[in-house]
Length: 142
Image (cartoon, rainbow, N blue to C red; front, top):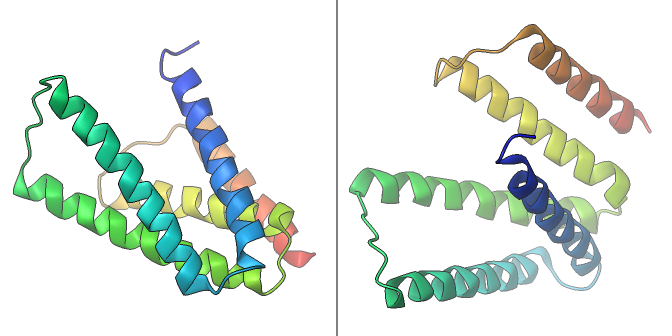
């Protein structure tokens, strides 16, 4: 087993909790309120982790490019959260909306990796992306 796989699966579990609770929250708060609360909690968690590293004396090298790219990632996740609240507020089941959103994210990220970063893709990996597209199509049909 690759040494990164358990951590990736734990990340997937955390994202599952994120999607699950976002779906539940969307039924009880407006999208803007939900997105702000979500971001405040995430910022507090990140701030606590940063403080912990700083108190341990960990070096934290920062570059302007890194900060800019992180800000763009934050813009993407912030917009995705607002839109996910809107999607779920429209009554889309979590068992359909989340796989379409996450699967679409996987597909678009792979395309960006191929086109912008010039990353390679093996035939089995390409087949996996074809299955993602098929899964999105099947889920969207209802």
